[in-house]
Length: 65
Image: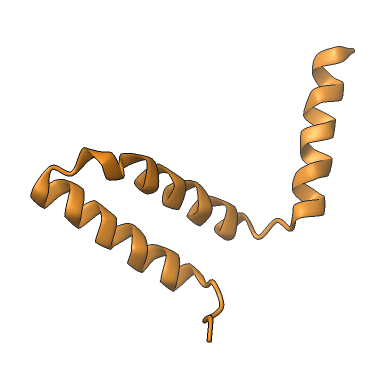
């Protein structure tokens, strides 16, 4: 059974990956670290996909006009 994604689970994964990189120098995990950081930021923003899509469209409209 899959557990729901929560801020705590994202932070836990972020800490685990950070530990691996810092302790063992496993730089191939840097992309995962960056992805988890971005996911945590998105989670904290609490924006659903529709809100994010609207923000993207608005930003695009602002650059076109």
